[in-house]
Amino acid sequence: MAVKYSMFIVLLSACVFTSFSEESLLPQKQDDIYVCGHENLYKNIHFIIQMYSMENSGRFPKSLKESFDYMGGDKSLKSLFKCPGRAHDLKEDKPDEMDSWVDYIYIYWSEGVKTPSEYPLVFDKRLSNHKGKGINILLVGHKYFWDENAKWLMGFVKKHPELKIQLPELESPVF
Image (cartoon, rainbow, N blue to C red):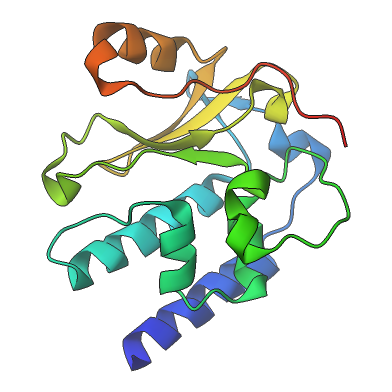
């Protein structure tokens, strides 16, 4: 429990001390790849999933809600599950309604740590999170990248229709 609490403090610090500008939310070209300013959010989500799997015989959480609950369900962690590139409504987000306000799609792989490292794990729920320019993707193997117009993801889905992966929404909901 002390380890989980220590990790919670590390994650909370990362959330508090990470600042964003409008420019940092859009992809920036760097060494012929695009990176987005909130890569640390994805790394923190991956870290939580890895911690969970270490304590659960290599099994991944079944949902982002399960990983949120695993870390204690503290309200301060909600920022990990909200894309800073998207405007949010001001209503109080209830943890039990997490699927309605989380900005990412999480894919539960029942194989857990045995899942191929090149499979997608977490990605933006809406293409409009970044002005329709693309989405951020985190793979099972911890690789993080910018996917312009979700081309890589659409190719993966086409190549693996049996996996039934949900694609990002093209429009953001109206608040």
